[in-house]
Structure formats: structure tokens, C-alpha cells
Image (cartoon, rainbow, N blue to C red; front, side, top):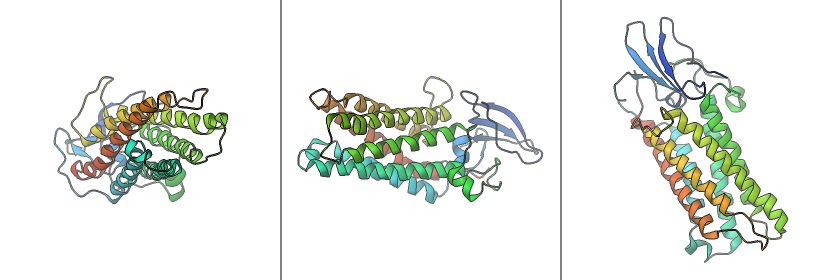
Length: 282
């Protein structure tokens, strides 16, 4: 499967492109007047505009969407961080703690769907004035030739797994077998989805296999989310139920959850910053 740069205005041409696994994530375009502009899939879906090649973005006002997505992810992250702090879960009823995680997962899913919608609503051309998909296509569209589509779709699926896992954890009468199937298994699947989605999002902004920062806020967000997903993955593995019904390593479960949530929290807080700082009108 290969992808391409979105539609170009008349007289524009592609100078060169770059991206992993056959996906196009970066491109340098030449306009009819000979000037070169940089296009990237992340900037495109977030409405940050084209940027003159080699010139820093001039900045602007953060979009309402970035505030909504950032706020929802931040609240969800705070819930997960809070629920994994000993002073919190040792002082409150287990049902309250479990409910904290479930509420956090709902905020995660809400934010993930907004990101999914944001991605589907991206213009069909490289310029902001290009036509956008219709209402239905922007709600439940299918755009498999875009790496960002896979990133947000897999992440959304992962949040639904966390919904299932955290809701099941609020039930007090589950057997050990039910806990393994309804709590631990969805938690593992959700963590795998987060790892895959975070890698897609990181590969979208990172030029190469090894970490190579372009000093953009978007790169920092993607790196933080990847680290957070790794921490969540460690937590999920450590949460494996033993025959006694206890987690294999409760301390590692809480540490991984807390560190992952903090990474997601910082990444969420940076979303409006990216929207304002990286905005350009080239």
C-alpha cells in the first residue's frame, strides 16, 4: 500500500517526498513562482498550514479542536495517574478507585474519537481552502493510505479496550477467570493498540529509524506518547493475574500506569502549544 501527497493546485509540483512503510509523511512542493514549501501529514490534519522551506512557522492562535482534544486527554491522564498513587488507592474504597480509572478511560475515548474525526476532516488538497470530506465521511470514513489514519484508528480501538477493562474492574463479584478475560486481557489488548498507534504517530514525525528530533512540538508530543505507551505496556504485563488472584507485580503496575499517565498528560498539554506555535500561512 502506498500513499501520496494530497491534491496539488494547478502549476504546483512535488520536488521530493519522505515517509516510512510506503506512507508519505513529508514533502517539499514547488509553487508556480518557484518558491518551495514544506508539507507534512501531521501539520496537514491539524490545520497548521504549509511552511516555507527552511523557515520557522510564525505562530498564531491555537485551534479550538486542539484545546478540546488536549483537555480531554489531560483529564483522562489525571484520572489514571491519580488512581495509581498509593495515597489515593489506599485511602479510598476499591470501587471508587476503579471508578476513577473508568471515568478516565471515557475521557480517553472521547479525545481519541475527536482525533479520529480531525484526521478524517483534513482537506483533500495541500492548501487549507481545499474541499473537505462530507459529514458522514468525516465521522466514519476509511482512509487506509494515510499513516495518521492508522495511528488514530488503532488508538481509538485501544481506548475502547480500556473502557471494557476499567468497567469490568468496577464489578466486585467477578471470578478469577472472569477477571483474566474481562480485566487483564482487554488491558493487554488496549496497551498493544496504544503501542502500535504511538509508533505510527512517532514514525509520522520522526525522519528515520533512530530518534531524530526536528525540534517541533509535534515530535515531542509523539515521543512522549510513545514513552507513555511503553509504560502502559509494562504495567499491563505486570498486571498478569497469578493463580492466587493477585497481580504479578502490583508495584510495577502502579508505577507503569503513573509514568504512562504523566507522559500522556504532558503530551496533551502540549497540543494547544503545538497548534499555536507551529501555525503558518505560507
